[in-house]
Amino acid sequence: MRLIQFGFTLLVLLGLSACSNDDDFGGSGLETQSFSVYLNYDDQSFNGKPVNQGKVVLTNTNTGDTYQATSGSKGVASFEAVLPGTYNVSASLTLNAQSFEQNFGYAPSSEEVIFNASQENIVVNANTLSVNLTLDAARIGDLVIKQIYYAGSDTKNGALFRDQFIEIYNNSNEVIYADGLYVAQLYGRSKTNSAAYTLPTGQFDWSQSIGMSMGIKANTDYVYADYVLQIPGTGTDYPLQPGESFVIAQNALNHKQPLVDNNGDPIEIGDPSLTVDLSSAEFEVYLGDFRVAIGEQPYQWDIQNPAVQDVNLAFWGRENYFSNNKDFVLDSFGRDSFAIFRADDQDFAAYANYSDPSVVQIEDNTNFYLQIPVAQLIDGVDLQHYNPSLQRPKMLPPTVDASAISVDGIYNSQSVMRKTKTTVNGRIILEDSNNSALDFKVMNKAIPKGF
Image (cartoon, rainbow, N blue to C red; front, side, top):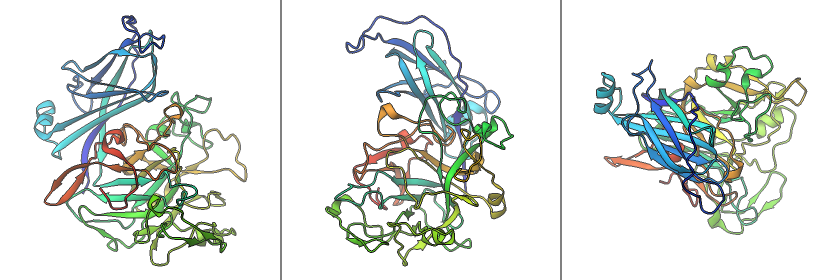
């Protein structure tokens, strides 16, 4: 069953006030100033009242430096000394059932209700000293993305990117069948500079895509997928017990051991400790048969393990405009986002696909991206570039993920993994506040099925 919880979206109202110039920041020559974040509940879904005890984080998009504050009874989180610059703002709040009922006059459908919000590229200077965040509703699912191993391992002594994987976890107290679950690798811009075809954040303005006719809802109500995988099964083939997970491997092999690629060339592993054994993964992504079917050769490193179940390729581009990506490769720099969702076959077949809005004319090599309703998403994670000065715009709305998470570099064996929240009768419950910066931690080495 799905839990209904709540999250923030926001309206940005920029306030004008005087600049504080009392303090100098670390001899940088720039003077710090005050900045305020005003938190309110939505006046339609809730009561419009100020949010008390909301936790707010400002993250400088150039340096990665953060400031933290908590809102008071009037809903204001005050920052007394902020260095002028461009910031991403996120906010979070958790209410237990009793507090929720006291605030809103009715009992929630879960023991805790979580609120989130985020806004990107807020310029803090003498003319912009405040921002308003407004509550909206969001949904939390019982399946969560537990671990994403995208950094890869050492290019000489490890497995490069061949050992990447995604792990999905049953965070509920009921059996959930993985059959039919969709896993989407999302697509968006990797730069924050604006253009004629972007939103102010630098993300694509999908309402400008060729053939699009739904206006701003193209950006607010949908995400766009580069690729979509689907777990096979007829409905009850792949039960997932409470507290259990499954791994989708790019290549379900023991990457600690030497291999022979599809060209017959040997692959040596200099230091097995840098990589992982994925030979017991539940699923793998194999494109060899698909590539042969479209007249192409299987990728050199897309080596199939016959003992591991292949996932279905639900979307790899529009018919006759298939992606030229030869394998399910995760971006080692962290410029991907991922989401899981469910849809019946008829609904999925009706999903539209569009070229990105920078395309002005369809060519033979144009790529198309599947439009997925946000309302269908069960869980999602925004990854981020490890370099604070190379941050990218978010792809997921704050109701799905209010922030982002990143490892410390590329090909360093690191993964991002959900934190353990608590343990009930031996079953581990993972953090799931729809805020990746809070829910995840960086693991120095990926551990399939680990905690």
